[in-house]
Amino acid sequence: MSGFQRKRNAFLVYAALVFVVAGFWMQTSNEPVFLGKYSFEYAMKAAAISLTATFLTISAHMLLTAKMSRRDDSQQQARQSVRVLAVVALLVVTYSLCEFVMTSVHRGDVAAEKQARRERLDTFHPFLQVSAASNDEAMHINRWGFRGEDIEKDKPEGTYRVFVLGGSTVYCSRAKFEDSHCRRLEVLLRSAYPARRIEVQNAGYDWHTSQHSLMKFLFEIQDFDPDLIIVMHAINDICRSFSPPRYSSLGEFQPDYSHFHGPLAEMLKQYAVEDQPPRSWVWHHTVKLFQDHWYADFRVGPNVRRDQEWRRFHSEGKTVDANLLPSLATYQRNMQQLIEVVRSKQIDMMISSQPSLYKESMSIEELTSLTFPMNVCRNEFENPDIQSLVNAMKRFNAASAELAQENDVGYVTLAKEMPKTLDYFVDDVHYTKKGNEFVAEQFFRKIQAAGFLQEDAED
Image (cartoon, rainbow, N blue to C red; front, side):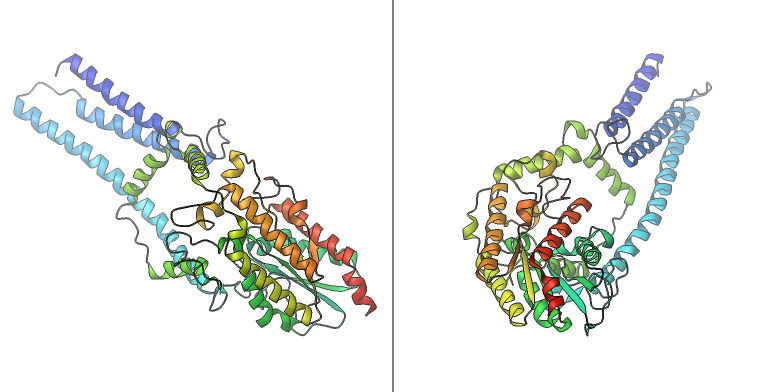
């Protein structure tokens, strides 16, 4: 091989190396902290890829192109074969080492996932689908399955007991117990009424609707002799108007919500389908790295993909008349029944409107924080636009207000008061720490204004 050919080949090899390595640096992370472009984790990942690729390329090139002493052709061919074998051995050893490390790391992940599945079985409930697992210290769940301090079923004399019902926006799994609005409400009430023994129990849970709350009150909560029931619903009942794709639902809308499998479908899938690890973790992650990150700034990296996906999804959505959502009638029926049964027990009650981030004009940061429209507030081949969800929340909250007025029940105008910004929301309807504090303050003010505790003391 002539000197020119060697130089040309070397140029092509290292040009290819630069092209491949540069591709992994041509992507912007979701939360850049390093050089204003990369997350720390991704910068380390890209650096490791660059160093590994450079080491392998230089080593292979040096082995294959090192000068050989003048010998006959057969000896040169034999030495060249040895060099090729040496390069192959280098790649095999590197691959095997990486595979061993990745398998060791993922073995722990697989074991943790299997344990998590067993723990999720603890949340199964034959009628509520899922519920909080009793005595869950991490989430501060007491022996009765409520998120709060442990209480006695027989209410001690002089105790004022509050139960808050709702879905995940009441349960607040993303917030620490002390930061959840139910706990903050308890702290505010105890501070304002130090002479009273006050207990606030969080009886909400993920995915739960007005139907779940009605069942929980009838078969659980009324046995604890509550003094005040606070209820907040909307979004989960709105979702029941739809039949989401894949395994989340079966068939068209049913008034008893039996078409909507939700969390139970996910649980069954986890147990029925045993995930098989890939035959090669190195190949699996290599393909994923190229798909997700390689020259992502010029095609569909995480940020770009999410933005484009949301713009497309939003543009394809159609406006749905909120009054035609089939779950509205079910929601009104469930809430009316809940009000009647609570009031029949001589228990005070408050209904709260449910705040959300949905609004007519949303920034791309706000849009990309949303999760409900793409996952559960949609059908198989069609989805409502954001305006539909704005209208739906207004209509369901209006239904709550109408029910409260007709039945002389306290109403909290939380949706009207709470700012629709990412300072208060982490996504569609779930709250930041600041948002939880705002909810607690609004509930507290309404309780004070209604004079529930003063009336109770007089009685």
